[in-house]
Length: 595
Image (cartoon, rainbow, N blue to C red; front, side, top):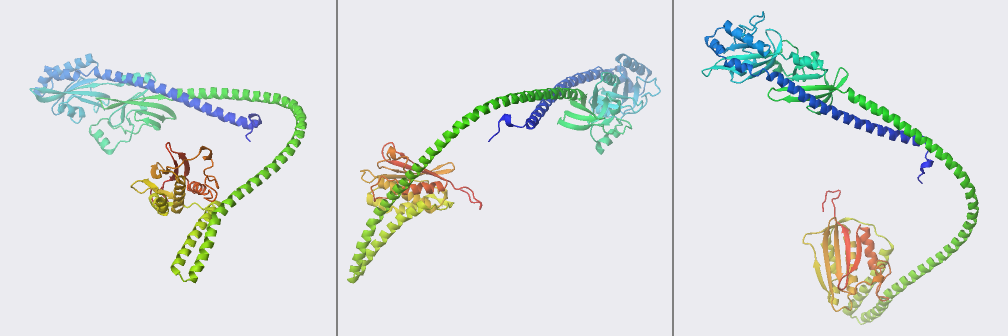
């Protein structure tokens, strides 16, 4: 019996309460974590959009300069002569000052610098060859060059933008503008933001954290290092890995990473046209603080509710104890009265048991008498016939009429077979045969059953209609027992059509999912409503005494249920009745056979 809530021990209820409270707090903190994380992701995306716009704005301010240089007549005349002129150097110096760029300079077709805005500086570009730089080779190929690198002359990093210079459709040089991006990094650093920009090799060249600058987000292959050294892009920087460790990866552009024992939410976005990737790292401290606050509040609230619940339970239990004490007194008085009533009930129950036992004994005697009468009538006539045939046989043997004597003994053999069938029915009914499951083809069982009853169809002039599938239908059962069921149903249908002017029987087989339906329809008198519930009971029959024991349908019912099927009978709309048998189909067995 399940104990009531009041009977559960306090420590057990306390354990259940703590478990429920812990699960609730965990679920709430998990929800708070997800909400705060979603907010951080949304804010980080907005920050990325802002930084991408700021970076593009800083670069677009100088995008026109290489074209202006390339279109200058002074520059083209200088390149045509192949010699540097003070006039062009002054022009570049003034242009660089007004534009606010770091340096502007012009190289000839071989990469030799002929004019530069820093011609006055000790580390001037004048006379130096930068043909190895990718921005020169890209411009020489007829395209605008874009390249970030550490200057090989000044050692100062910058973003180089180049444009090819043509004269009469002939390549004569390259115009270059160098832009200093340090102010942009200073703004990021002063804003307290962690912002990184990496190239297509994963090298961080812009960073609000100076210690992460010129480090890589992923290991570089030997080929990548060789290409970077060939273009002298980052000087002698070792290009070590950024000290970031992935904690959780949502996608390539969304991760939770850890650096210096601090966790960050890292969002990244590609910058089309530049082959760069912009990264923003936001500390996870607000998420952890929010989760901790929710967990603390939830735990305190859960403990408060649990304590209140335990107090109310103890108070109610005290009230119940007082009430139970009062009820115990009243129950004691009731028990005394109940004991007297129980004694009276026991005496009445004993009387009912005695009466019931007498009724059961009478029912057994009645059933035994009915069965004995049926057996006597079934066996009495064959025994009398055997005596007559035996006397006739002796006379024929004395006369030495062997042929006639053989026919007499053949008749005696048929009578004994009939008597054996009567006793066999009793044996089948009394002893349940073990269910044997095997592969059985229903068409073969029907063929055998019809062969055993063929003389009855001819004798009573019954017309048989068969509706069987062309393909073999395989059942799971015992062929001999299924044949016995079919023979019993055929006999039952033939008996029902005795005396009817129209005698037709239809045998039909249909597949129903995992079962096979066998229906046998006759044109007899049908089943009376009052007999429907007793149809499959043993020794029940509507035939005259001596015409049968009433075991055929009972035995059929037992066989079908033993095989895992079902059997039922219904009246037809016009005339006669239909017996419907459902048996399981053959399924794949241990030997690999299939249906």
